[in-house]
Length: 138
Image (tube, rainbow, N blue to C red; front, side, top):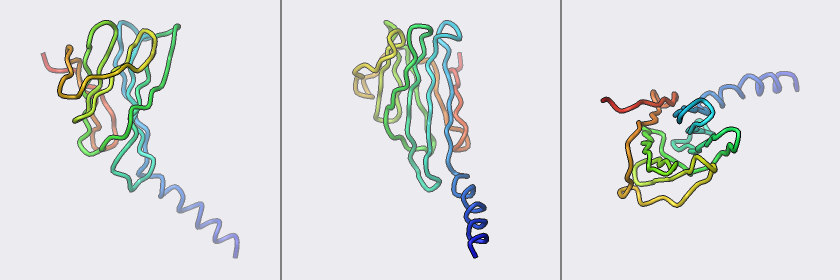
């Protein structure tokens, strides 16, 4: 009796993970050793939210992953702005976060409706599972 139960469990386990994902997309700053990567994790197949993280890379000085918070996955769009002085702003709906790409730290961000800076593009979750970065049309 134990063999069929183990077999059933091993066959069902992958089905529970099919709706989970970890997606990343990057914006290169200056070169391939200086970048801002956005990561979205959906931990449970039934969840409508995911965890948003920023991975700031300024090699060889630093590389750090910063957890920003939870976001709704449906029609997810993460706007990216160059706020000057090596500070970049990420904005989703009514939330905003800022990171310094020289020392790989999170800095205090303005309210989402007060974000300033040059728009660089948008990280988008296509088909609710593929994270891509799109630059604005010129």
